[in-house]
Amino acid sequence: MSIPPPPGPQQPPTPYPQAPYGQPYRPWTQGYSPYNRPAPVNGLAIASLVFGVLCCVPGVGLVLGPLALRQIRRRGERGTGLAVGGTVLSAIGLVLWGLVLATGGASAFWQGVREGARDGASVTLVKGECFDAPGGRLAGETRDVDVVPCAGGHDGEVFASFRLRAGDYPGDASVGDTADARCYGLRDGYAMDGWALPDDVDVYYLTPTEESWSAGDREVTCLFGSVTEGADLTGSLRNDETVLDTDQVAYLKAAHLLDAALATAPDAALVEDDLPGHKAWAGRMSAALGRQARLLRGRSWPAGVRGPVRSLAAAADRARAEWSQAARAEDADAFREHYDTGLGLLDPEAAVPARSALGLEDTPPAAERGEGGAPDAPAGPDAPDGPDATDAPGVAATEV
Image: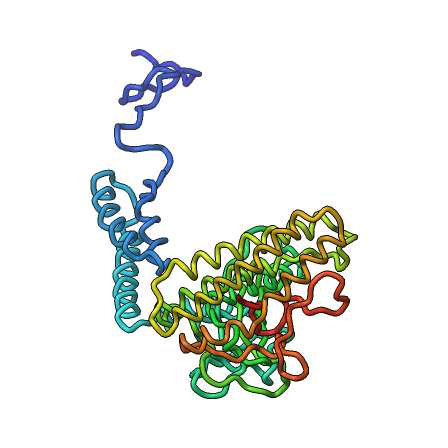
């Protein structure tokens, strides 16, 4: 009989096979990961939602939404809700835009935006419009005006406008100087017959301020207004090609040649201070009178106008000869002799018969009449207080 061995360090046999030490675990099967990584969000879905929220471009979101849904299904990406939301918002925005355009709300909206941006700007008015200013004052800063019919009383009438160059604000003085020069130069294009302007009418202008300049305002508005406080203008002052007949326009264009030359008189009051400048001015006067005479003779005038116009052309020839001699003068005394004679031949009364025949205003402006009502020639060299033809309110220079 055998006796079983006592228990020892040996391990009892196991019925299950044990893997050798160090054998690796089963690898993860394809399609799984030891970490839960979510699928990426589709970029077009995000863009669709963004453009859907931005109502200014709803059509873009409406296109991107369906494209995003197709990509999501094909790639297994996320963002279905974003794409659907962007599509719905874009569709709503498109409908709202259609309603705004159909009812004219867009123009009203942008008009409000422009008015807000131009707060404090020079007022935008159209050539030929008449208006009333706050308190009836055209001087100083004018922000708000009311457009009114020209037939009734009004404070101002717009005759031109222009834009200043872009860049930094040039300063109040520079803007004012530019407006002054340009507006006076544009005056004759709207009121061709300077004699028809009332004696108390002068040129004013509305200009950008430093504040409005930063908002894009560059517009200068040129206008007529009364220099008499509390006085209104009545009726339109417009007399140009839209109002005058062809003969009247032809006559006034010839007259403006001399107006332009007179306005270029040198700044020096004394001939001795700038003899070359005065001689150059006399040359411009001579050339303008020569062109004026040729225009007056070169047109076939109506029977009742032909005689007075020929007389004017002859007077222009006589004046041209004296101004031509002044342009060739060797000294101040010789210049002054021919200047005085030539200036005396520029008599406003000489234009009255032709103007009457043409149906134009035939009373010379007050600035060209003496105390007794007789014509007074424009001031020239050595006249200490003579009026400047370019600054006389509402008055064109003497015509021949």
